[in-house]
Length: 505
Image 1: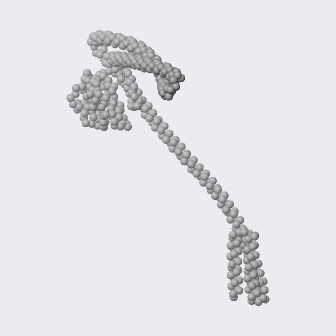
Image 2 (image 1 turned 90 degrees about the vertical axis):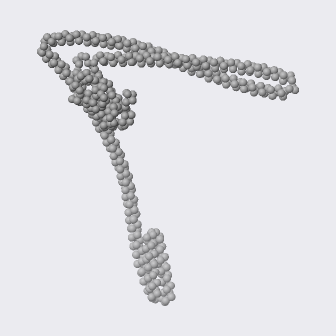
Image 3 (image 1 turned 45 degrees about the vertical axis):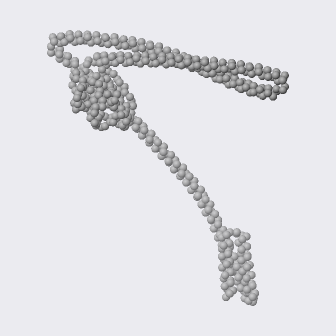
């Protein structure tokens, strides 16, 4: 059932005190589908129905839990809802929203606190990722020694198994290296035999060549056949030499491989030495653990003897109590109450430590949150400063552009002022020239009245031509400005029109 269950209870003790709250630790696997309707109840062992619970509480999960992930959780059972001290065995049962039991814990009982000298307080550290803190367990000393003895025996079995595995690996490596060496030796011998055969064939070919050369000297009529045979033998000789070179290279490669295998063999030997030293160390550790086990057994025997002695003392105290009567019973009650108070104070101290650790964890989370907020504000401030800097650069560029435009505008104004002054001056000159032309025209009128009709027309045309020519020359030579030329032509054309109209009249 434990292998198939989707919920696993952890750190379930054998005894609990009904005067203090009980912590129930459990883990949800990735296959479990958690619901807010899941609950955990305290049941008597052997109960036939899930409705026979003594008390229950809702199964909680940490914040940010996502379905399909493994998580460790815990819940609290208040002290005033717990059963009274008795020999009845209880167990935790996890019930899902469908009303099915997903997991059952090992049995435990509720009993009164034992004398403090027979109990041991342990601190069990949990994973920091699960958000849990140290758990205080109060268990008997004999149970603690028994659990330590079991752990030592388990460690000893694991060490022995690891030692056997290392020995098997060392033997396998030795066997593999031996086989590889034998294979390499066989290949090397085969290569040597092949090289010797090739050398013999090469010697035979050389002898044959020598014989053929002698025959060639003696016999001339078979020169062509001998030449062809000689060329074939030479080709075979070159091929054999090339093959010998290839074989020599293969021999070099085999020698290099032999060196590598020798190095590998040396490394294997060093590894075997390390394994042997590790085996010796494990053997020494096993002996130390055996000594510790013997000491633990001796301590357990001493505790058993002390238990027997305490039982004998208790029997004698009972006889004395019967004799002393009510007064001694009252004293015993006060002593028992004092021990209960000490146990309650110890538990209260542990609860205060838990609260203090929780507050420290909350303070650490708040500090991280403030730190993150400060980093975020710093990033925003940097971005704003960068934006302000970009705006300032843009304003500086606009200022420089405006200054350039103002300079160009001032230059345009200066040039326009100069142009305006030149235009005014040219206009004054044109006015003076027009007045001069009017005077000349009046003088010419007087001359026309004296002269006849035809001469009057000729003189008028000549006067107009001379006036236009002189005025154009003055404007062209003196000023050379477009505006002056335009004004001049305008005045000249108007004068010509008036003169022609008067002449017609």
